[in-house]
Length: 399
Ligand SMILES: Cc1cc2nc3c(=O)[nH]c(=O)nc-3n(C[C@H](O)[C@H](O)[C@H](O)COP(=O)(O)OP(=O)(O)OC[C@H]3O[C@@H](n4cnc5c(N)ncnc54)[C@H](O)[C@@H]3O)c2cc1C
Image (tube, rainbow, N blue to C red; front, side):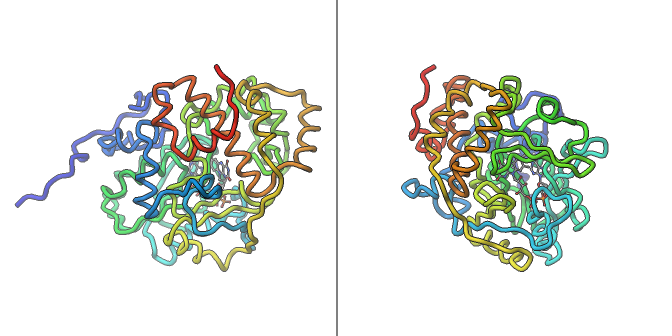
């Protein structure tokens, strides 16, 4: 009897540069570069929103919309603020992600780690790989703040004989991964998720750097931080900060990828463990343990981190409501007003989990308006129930 060949093996990935099935909404997750394009209609986060089914499959249940914390941050068992006691030089924050990935490899829990290095010519050009040594993982530290086709490695999983794998990735990559996970021939998959918002193409990133930084060509790192400022680090080690409210949003309003303008998976709801910063005090990382697998991952890194409980201060609602029209239209304040507003909001504004909710509310309302305006026929099916409930707390402008 001959073994049945899975249907997807007969499919062929699209060459780079060809239009993808999701067209303008493609986030370049990489799925369509591989024969797993066979599943794109079900798997693509922008063609088929299926949070309820995937949350149930991965975590055993959907998020509870009657509990505010779950509605915002997804299914979880625990949230903490943490930082490495010995931070990794050159990591995005303190290097919890890279350290955990190295540990999982060293402990032989996995044979490979999907992560994103940069191309030899360009520090921000993403180059996804399956790392099989700690050195390769460490070479992937720090964000490449651009759309990254992480799932281009899917065919290499079988070719390389990988049975136990850790995948590090952002929401759109993880949604597609979860949809095809059973077809990958893996015995165990671990998913370490990063929160993600407002991503850009490599060209879009250049425009952002050119309009925002005093020295775009020397930027080695940047982050939108909890103090309402963008922090840039330069090659010479100097830091530059620009207040959020002073960003040239009139020039930048088309810079974000359409996929990111219509994304509602900011906090990576389908990962086992999420490592970001948005719910933590300034300088700390924010860890969300979603299920037992995530707890096992957390335990592995416990002796390398110090932790504190997450906190919440302030009330975001009026600030979100008042900024909806300006955010939607991309209004830019003069720099003196932006700095003043930054100082005031940092003193009295939302902190900890309330800051995370401020950011989620601001992005979800903006993205809801964007989707309603540009893809009205998709709006109802594409926006998940938790995002509809979050957006419904605000009064939105009529178009
Ligand atoms: C595009 C992007 C946007 C983000 N936005 C937010 C946000 O709004 N709020 C928040 O709380 N956190 C956000 N994060 C997560 C945060 O910036 C840190 O990456 C996270 O806290 C881990 O820090 P670290 O020092 O432990 O990571 P490191 O040890 O430096 O490791 C960074 C890891 O990121 C992976 N990576 C780099 N670029 C990409 C990419 N383009 N796609 C997928 N994986 C990548 C690398 O493989 C590496 O393993 C974002 C991350 C990315 C990549």
